[in-house]
Amino acid sequence: MDDARTYNKALTADEVKQLTRGDLLRAWSPSPTNGAIVDVERARQPLTWSKGDKASQHDVYLGLDKNGVSNASATDSTGVYRGRQGTVSYKPAEVLGWGTGPYYWRIDEVNTDGPSPPVRSGASRWPII
Image 1 (cartoon, one colour):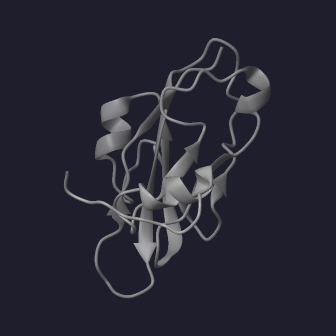
Image 2 (cartoon, rainbow, N blue to C red):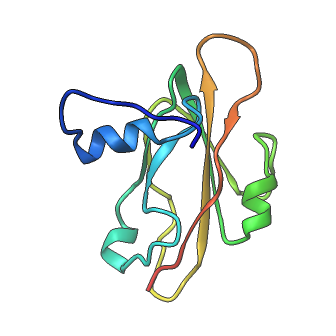
């Protein structure tokens, strides 16, 4: 065991999620989650996530090729890079229809405290049925 903590109250599910999220600078709690099976109604809703600590903006990547999404940068010209924004949601311009996908998406956090490169998150995969 590497870490043990004791609390004087029962933690809520959200508090446990916050404690176990890993790198605090990365985007987390994506919706849809990795591996989620998404119906057409959910596909019409924006992608959402929780921002990493110190993040002021978010680089959004979305596409059908996992490697393309995983390896793309903000200079991408294939359409995978969807832009930098200040909100924690993104609604694709195109219609994500029935039987398409799987789609992969990634959020890179742009931090407020310096010129360091954006903090990469892993690509999430989700098919639309």
